[in-house]
Amino acid sequence: MKKAIFTLVMSLAFNTFSEEAKWKIVEQIKVDLNGDGKQEELVLEIPEGWRDPGEFTRMTFKNSKGEKSTFSDLSGLPWELKNSPKNLVKSKYIFIFGNSKHPVLVFQEYAYASMPGMIQFFVMSKDGKLQGLFNKEFELEKITEKANHKIRIHGLPCGAECWGPETNIVCAYAPRLVYDVITTPEYKIVLNEAESKKRNLADGYVWHGPKYSDKIEIPVKINKNRK
Image 1: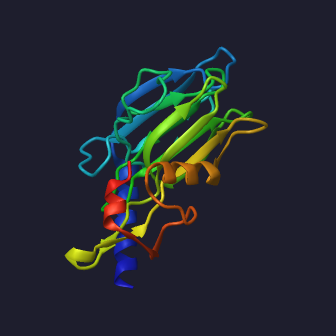
Image 2 (image 1 turned 90 degrees about the vertical axis):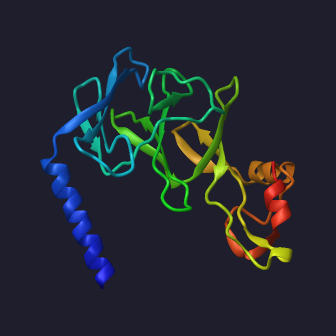
C-alpha cells in the first residue's frame, strides 16, 4: 500500500510539474512523412530545470493540416545506433528511415536499472495521425534495410541474469530477436521467429524459442562468447 501511495504522489507531482513548467524546445524537425509534398512538424521539448533522465520529455506532432497530437512522459536520448540505414533528417534525437514517401520514425528512451530502454517506432497513418508501431523495452542493436525496402530490427528484449558458484556460473536464456517491418497492406512490426533462430545459432548461441526464461540455464561461456 505504501508503495502504491508513493507512486501516486510521484505521479501527481510530475503531472503538476508538467502543467506548470515552462517548456524549452530541444529540437524542431520538419519532414514529409506521407509523400504528399507537404511537411509535417515534430517538436521535442523539456521542462526548464529538468534534472531527471532524458533530454526531451514531450514530443508534439503537427501534420500538414495543422492537426496536433502530443506524446508525454518520455525520456528521450540522443540517437547513437551506428548499425542502421541513413537518417532521412538531420536530427540528434529522431531517426527516420525507409521509403522516403512513407518513412518510419524511431527514437530511444532512457534505460532504468538493468532493463533496456524503451524503443518507440511510429509511422504516419492515412488519416494524418502519428501511429505507434512498436513500443517495447528493447536493446536495439541494428536496423537493416535491403534494396526492396525490406526492413529488419535486431536486438535483445533484456539482458541475461547469471548466477551460481564461480566454477559453474549459468545464465538465463535470453535470445536475440529479429522483427520485420511490414509495409503492405498496412504498416506493422512482427516477430520473425525463423530469422531469430537463424541469428542466434549463427552467433554461437542456442535456440529454445523467442521468450526469455530463467528456467533454461545457459553456461556463462556460451553467453559471453556469442557474437
